[in-house]
Length: 416
Image (cartoon, rainbow, N blue to C red):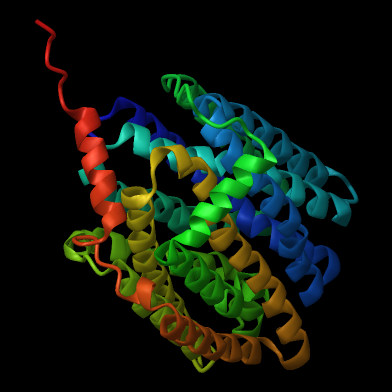
């Protein structure tokens, strides 16, 4: 934060937009539930966002390596402002339309997926190599600030007016654009590959060649697909006879994650990041399974908080691996692939949760999902020994990237 003005601007922008986005995260499933009263309809919101996320996430990675990343970020922010305003207008209509929630959800997800690889990739450009772990923890703190306060406020706002919730989200994008406009230009390298299908394939080929990276993607995706169930929170709050506490359910995971982040200095001393991801993802599944057995609201809250803490530790280790080992010329495309792992998992997981709840109820969906998560993570750990044994002190990619950045940062000797 002291060393980089651009990082401070990006950090502040992220805090503000995360706040508004988290409010809308509560508003959309709540409004869908009010309009349809259907588990499946709520779960399908995430499914509608899946294809735009996949296509735009990959393409966003390609353009992040080929174009000015600041320009991509600012233009995407403008698009997100428009989609949020459209949700606000729809909510204020006498008869809000369900299709608008699906369409705007898909469009906003596509735009955010175009933007996210550039946001991830610029961290390498504005933060020193040895500060990447600290940046990962700060990013966690930023996310948790919005994820704790905003859902709690959103839970109160939506019971009064979903239109007001979307209006706050729209305002946050206006403020964020002002901050992002002040970030310096971050052009691609002169020899950067142009955005094309060939460059996308090249990025995928590089990712597949790295078994340690493949492990981060697969373990996180398995954990989210089998145990993510935030789409069920409106129904869970109703079954617990605490509908007024819906926002707290959404905040619980972030509270656990915040505690993990604030006390996360120890993560900088961990070098076996792959094993750390495996342990954290397993604990996430166990905590979600225990949620199904909790008899009252506060025990459910504690279980969700524990799950959030485990997920945050996994995220810190994954981000550190990515930013310390991926060459700058591939960082945007790999960020697009990362987006597929950590974004598609929750989308598919919420769709799975809705379908399983339709068959056996909310506790069945939560419990079976947690058990399946643990089984999948342990199976992946057994089949990916390279990922399990990763050590930042000896990994050739981490050492090579560290040496490259140190050489780039070294002062140039004057020519006699």
